[in-house]
Length: 427
Image 1: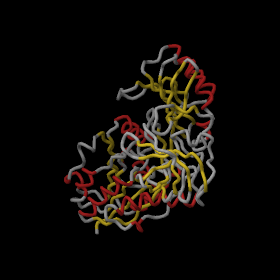
Image 2: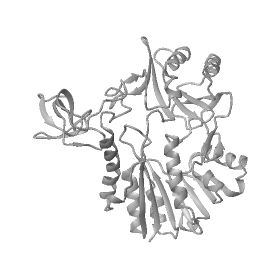
Image 3: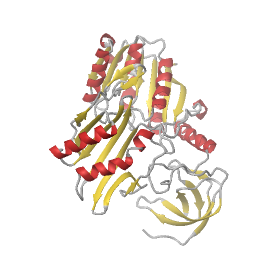
Image 4: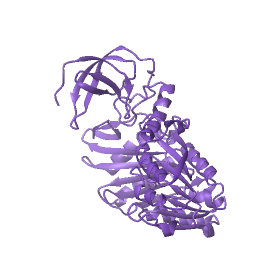
């Protein structure tokens, strides 16, 4: 990786990944840790993919939108990209990511509403990387564009219950793993306390189980499970002191180990509120990519008949069990199905008043194309990627739908990721 002589540059914009952009004679250079208005001395290099990236050597002048990061690890840890951006500029940038994605597909960016804000200390899910070395335990998040692990002393973004566990997790790893081992620890804050899943390259032995049992007792964890790298089967609970319950709009559910949940309770509530408003007149609803039922179960509790579908069988089983336990069995039909390969066909969409979509980052292009030919009156589309949402929105609108509203939601604070919910109706 060759570097050019130092350059003096002016930062003119904030890019989609959170890096400042400098326009130079060598081309566009992306500078992490910079904001528009900065004048910097940088050392530039070309990355493997061809992009020019600059490292700050000296800050000659700070832009008006620069802020003081709230975490000591910012700039090294790859978990956050934009802690250095002032709040108003940060909110405009995040909303702008959604506006730009829609504009590229021919939509008026003005349809995008205000950003539902995120707050520090609210992330209820985290996955920590672990590497055991002769010098001790490396436990934390990875550096940006690197496999190196930043050992965390703090993380202001995480729920305090998860962050407070960090020092003790190192001691647990020392008692369970040997030098050279790698592992991952997934922690989720549930309504019943912390739920943790260990991922490793081997099955747990008796001593491992005893160590995990002692750890869960000492730190009042609800459940600890163990899974294997690269194995699709569900991780198995090793310790279950109580049900690791979460509440979905008043409906209690025990998710499987390391289940998909929305990143924050507030973000989930914002999505659920807007979906509920859009489906106020719907009687029969399909919740596609339903997960554990964050939307399906409250919709059923509100009197809707819900067909809930997801590819993860353990999530569907948990959803079905919760429906039955809460007296919603007659209102919920839960099914396991890979919607990427087997989307609902037109004959299956007949009779539905509304569809909820919450696909992974790749979106739901095949399902959107079929919905575009359907008579479904309302579609509520929750997305974690504005670009694939905009692609699918174009398919729907070319088929006769109208995009009525888009609300961006900041569940992933200080990162380039932004959630949103879009509401479509037949025009």
